[in-house]
Structures are given as C-alpha cells and as structure tokens.
Length: 455
Image 1 (cartoon, rainbow, N blue to C red):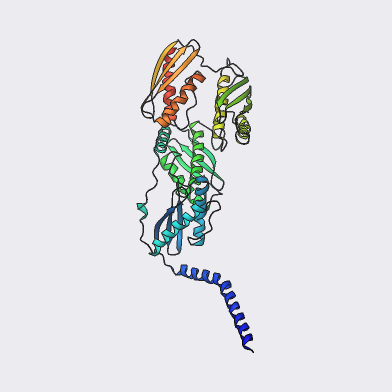
Image 2: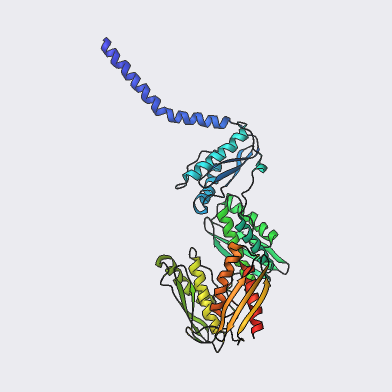
C-alpha cells in the first residue's frame, strides 16, 4: 500500500469515528444525565421554590418521600387564570410523571412553564442540599386587594342574612376538564354536607381539590372559601356550583335540581320591559296565558351578534322553561344576561296585577303619594344610608342617596346606579347592584321608609 493510499484509509477512519461520535453523543449525554439524576439523593420533606412568571411569582411546593417526588403543588396567583393558571394545572402532573423539573412547556405559555420548571428545580436543589432550604412557612400568600377584601366581607355579611330551606339541592359549573356538580344537603342546622363530583378533572389535582373543598364549605357554612392552591379553576367551579345550590335553598326550591318557579300568578296579556345591556337597550316582550309564561322575545340590536345576540336566543328559551325571570347567565355574556333578566322581571312585574297595563305600560306601585320631599334612613355596609325622595303629582321625581361611610368604589357607585333605578321603577323595589347587596338593601329600605311617609 502506497503512502497515498494509507493517507486515504486514515482519513476514512477519522470520518467514521467523527460520525459515530456525533451519532452516539446525544444518547450518551442522555444516559449520563439519567445516571446523574438517579445518583442524586433527596432528603424527604416539603420544599418550596419560586421563579418569576408572566404576571408575577410562580411557586412550587414539592413533597419528597423515600420513593422520590411524591407531590407538587404549583401556584401563580398573578398569572392569567385561563392561560397561566390552566398551564400550571397541566404541568403539575407532568413533573410527577417525569420525576424531574424538565418537562415539555405548555403551548402558548412558555414563560409560565419555564418559571414552573425553574421553581421546581429550585425546590429540588434544596432537597438535595445543593442550596439552603427555604422554610415553607416563610412564604406568604399574596394579600387580597382592598376591594377584594371588602367584597368578601360584604358577601359574608350577606350570607349571614340568608336562611335556607331544608332539603337536597344541586348546582353545576364548568371546571378545568368538564362540569363540576355540587350536591348540598341542608338541615335546620345549616349546611350538613357537600358532595362534589368532577369526573373530568385530573384525579391527582382537581379530584384531590374537590375533596378538600367539600369540608371547607361545611366548615364555612357558605359558598365562598379559599381556593385550593394550584387548582383555581376547579375551585372556582366548585364555589359556583355550591352557590347555585344555595340560591335554590334560599328561594325554597324543591329537592335535587328541580326548578325554582316564582310563586306568583300573572294576568294573561303581553308585557314589555327594557334594561341596559352591553351595547344598548335589551327589550323583552313577554306573552302570558292562563298556563303561565307562553313566550319571551328578546331584542338587543346593539349587542354583538355572535355573543350577545346568541345569548339572547338561548335566554328566551330559559325564561319559558324556568317560568321565571331568574335563570343562569350565559357564560361570557353576563351583562347582556343580566339586562335580559331585568327586562323580563320588569315585564312580569306589570303582569302580577289584574289591572296591569299591557305592552309597554309603566309598572308603578299601586299607591298614591302626596307631593313633597321625604327622607328615610337604613343601615348599610359601613354606616347609615339616607334617601331623599321628591314626589310630584306625576310620581317619584327624584331620589338622592347618601352613604358617606360606604366604600366609594363599591357602595358609592352602587348608590348612584340605584338612584336612577328607583325613579325608573317608580318603586322602592329594584334589583340589587351585584356585589353590593347590603348597600342595595339599605337603599331600598330607606326609599321605602320615605315613600311610607308620603302615603
């Protein structure tokens, strides 16, 4: 073999060796990583790691047993619930399955996913002794905003005033994987038991959260409890389902899922009502026969066709089925739904009396008032709410509501809305402003007090 041929052979051997190195390097590195991972020894216990996510901190609470990673709870209270929150719920079981901090990111949520991986790795580093352990109890839960605290307090106070009729009631709401159903048993002592079922929720996370929440509802005797960390969507669905059941119990609905029908008799005829929707007015035309509500036609020309328009079509059927103005709002169209309910309620108020005027006539209280200015006072959320009512020969001319001790953003704003409602309804009975039940009830009581003086 010539020197030149030897050179070609040597070159060929080098090319083969280089190719083998490239081809085998990735599996080799993976094998090395796997061996390294297996060689890491973790001290059993609970460890908390954190990292910056899309909206704020993402925390991972990792429980280690002798068998490895036993549980992982991810929390990111400042992540968007629909995206980041949902991603965290998906990632937790992935980490468990992989027994590692390295998993595939959730599509569309790369930042949140990377933060979760970093937080889990941070916790694992503590468990392996690589870095100092951060005691779990040192990490504080995010503080609720002032508005959230006030809403929760107001809701709690409103809950205390509700009385429930003994029986079994059910409610349903959309969870992370599908429907979450709550079966609530009420006795004379209050909420006896709450059974939550969510067959499409993840067993390790959502399923475990529902078990914890069942006890919480009974302990709190209300539908408002703290969400289970890492399972916000499932928790919110459980609370909504329990609230739905409690609303039936508060209204004296029949057992387990039967529809609560308003115990009112209506005069046959056609009646209309109007309320402010998302884009403009929503009009309801309600046809009453001797059998009850025959049909409900809803028109909202300024509502978005795909959302509000579609919602009105669904609601028309719901009102007839329920024989009531109170039905579940269409998801994603709360404002339009509330407007439809208010418009139907307005129409039904006209139909309550035999003397009610059909199709568009104003539903005024069957009372005659003396012209003049009258005042009434009632206890609100923060203090007294005072109503100054001006009566003319035409009826209620104006209503001025003052509640200096009410919260400006919530109670104060509610009083402004209610002033107009009283004049429009020509009555002290109007729909409460959502989230401000106590303030609304106080305003209605104050206006009623004033009107009683005017009789």
